[in-house]
Amino acid sequence: MTGSGMGCPDWPKCFGYFIPPTEGSQLLFEANHSYKKGMMILMDHEAFLVAKTDFVSGNKMNTSNWEVYSKHDYTTYDPVHTWVEYINRLIGVLSGIPILIFTVLAFWFWKKNKWIPIISVLTLFGMGFQAWLGKTVVDSNLAPFKITIHMVMALLIVAFILYLIFASKTSYKQQKYHKLFFNILMVAIILSLVQIILGTQVRQFVDEQTKLIGYQKALWLESPDLKFYIHRSTSILVLALNGYLWYINRSNVLGFNKIRLVIYCVILEAFTGILMYYFDFPFLSQPLHLVLASILFGIQCYILLECSYKKRQNEQA
Image (cartoon, rainbow, N blue to C red):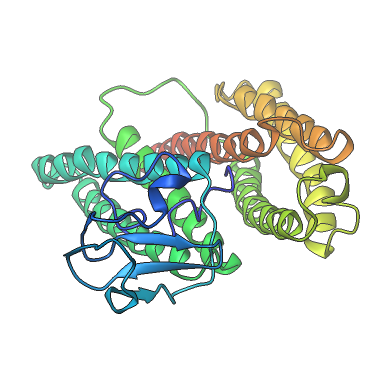
């Protein structure tokens, strides 16, 4: 969300290091330096060279020890983007640890609710697939459709974990099932997902504009593509649908109180969108916009779980 996807040009290491460099000088050729296979140097901002084998450099550079990194043509080092991407990868690895643990523990629920171990295993495989997707995104130099799949997969993992949290509860709130509320909620969730997908595409368009014209923020959306207009117009429908859900919940006293959080997220989402378009992308407005969208999707999914539970109760009664 910060545009740091290429902060590390390789995967799983970063410039061939387990801990990436903190300044550009560390990517320049050094005499009498011990290089490991896969470590990179940057040559005149034109190409990354990668060490073919382990070796100790001499006083002058021996080109036979190096080859051009040819998976893509990215040739930039930005310490902020590098460390954002590196921390992103570390969090990905760390998040896999509790997922692995709860997947093992989930089999205690096999007799009570088989879906808990099944969804746990799917979450574990989803994390592995997400890691592989991360590699393909880097290797493709941030191909837009791969970024979108990467984002959707992250949201799917969130939905899986929310299901596990809900399914393992021992007590539930007093709420009422309402067919119209349930059906509109389903549409609202699908619409939120579509908006997030469109948002990642708009974000990619902005990144491409940044490469073309630099950090002239006022020009980034001067001539946007069709996806931007669809994304902006659909936000009105998102507000209307979720507002109607709030009205149904309130007028029928259904008890789905998290719908208020949904409304707050939608309003803040619209506000950050206005900031970006009319006030030239203030600091943190882009990542905040997508964070809010992800939170909105998560809350909607949890309300759907609550609603589905009440629906099953009604059917069993």
